[in-house]
Image 1 (cartoon, helix red, strand yellow):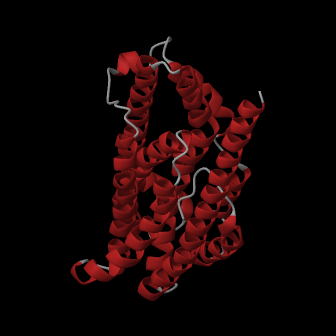
Image 2 (cartoon, helix red, strand yellow):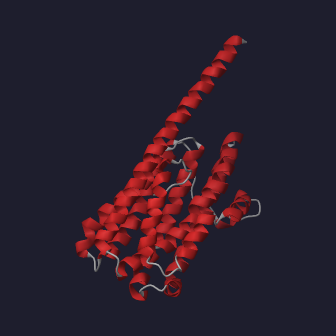
Image 3 (cartoon, rainbow, N blue to C red):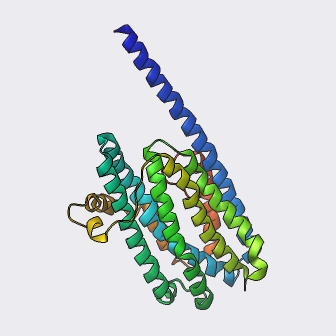
Length: 292
């Protein structure tokens, strides 16, 4: 009996040490991401200043970034991870594959539809923000696909976090910020204005986050893919319960404040800088979904 107890204690001690290591690693990665976020804002200031282009870019980036919180961060942390962990606990490989395939299908259809509608309705959307219509429309249309890319990245992050794998997801925001910083310097000379170069950097960063995590997802051994939409949205589909669980918390208090502040008369670029500074002290806080 004592030998069993000793083994149990050794196992618990090992898990605690691993948890501490993971927490420390995520804390460091998150802080690095926060610091790069400040460098990102400095890069934006160098390229765009505080004029019309900066205002247009801030509005254009805020629109898909706000919707990202609905489809990616809140829904993944609140609904997907607890549900997926339940499937892993049941050790039913077929049901787990069906759940992931259904989740991927529902996500791609919903987000793809929102992106398509958003691009089509951009002229009407930007009217609510009082920014320069012509440039804001172009920039918003460039950056709307960012929503789809980062939603896929969030799904991958949810899968990895459920398996207790945190490093790839912790490094993904760093890649986003690096792309945001580097791409404008690399391509701005060939673009009509620097704001469009930065918009391409945003989309590149979203793609980098998803591609970076894909090998780690494949390494888990789970295989899933796009299935029939009818099967994904059927009454027996687990995604119906998933959507119901996510719905009550789609909008956090911070999301609401960001949306409301976007309509205030203060310069949007100054609010973006303030938000980045406010988030820096939280850089050592472990979060299930952090995108820089």
